[in-house]
Image (cartoon, rainbow, N blue to C red; front, side, top):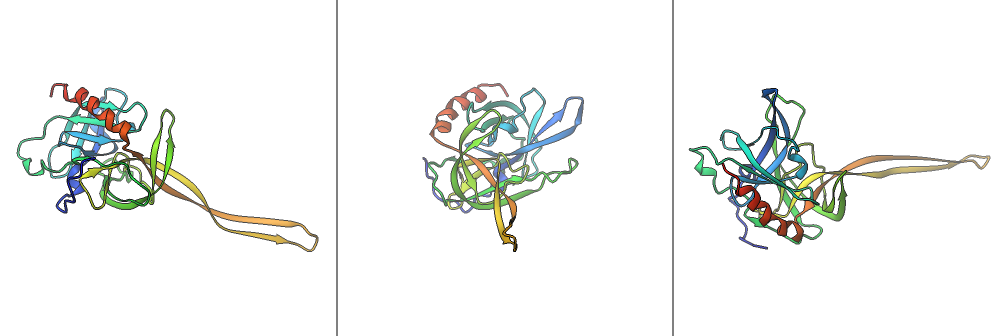
Amino acid sequence: MIDPGPDPRFFHRFAAGAIYCEDPKNPSTATFLGSCGAYTRREVFLTAGHNIPVDDRPTFIAIEGGEPPRRVIGVAVHPVFDIGLIRTEPRASGYEGYDSYYYTALYHPVGDGVEFICYGYLNEGNPEEQPPGRLIKGCFQRDMIANTSDKQYPAKEMSCAAPTGLSGSILAPSDQPSLAMAVVTGNVESDILVYRIIDQDDAGNVRTESISRIVSYGTAASITYDVDNWLPDAFDSILSLPD
């Protein structure tokens, strides 16, 4: 783990991005896929693996600061974790002022109760508008194993829900905002008992009535040593591609 120390000047929104893919039959139509965060440089982004299209649809990333969206030219997806890397074309000229906004290193291992902060784009259902970006804070509640249709990996349960679109956002320690310690991947649901009534009538019949509510908690893929060891080869594979 590299520890560059706290940086109060780090603005998460300038390191975050929104991933879109175009409809090849209608290039003017784009679908929002999820969030991501620039990692170690401004043209490489960490995200959730399921945010990366499995086909060859044109994909691009929109980032804060008014810069035009960047075309995606290379991707790598972890074989086990729901984590991926995206490389974009270089930034457009005239936006040099944002070059320092990226997550500088990984932070692990991460214990329970660690407070996190992240910035992502929430899908509010209107494809005609840019999804709103929001800063979200919380803490990790427990370790868990996340299961999807094709992957199973160590994850952290968040103390808040992960709204649609937040998947792919990087979670950073609240006191070390430029470090990456997990990637948002989805939600788990917990059935919480609100109250239970047990009633017995004069004939001895027992009636039980329960009321519960569903609570959603976000899940985040842990950036473990397995991910750390995968990243160098993933970087080599996408950085070797031509612009």
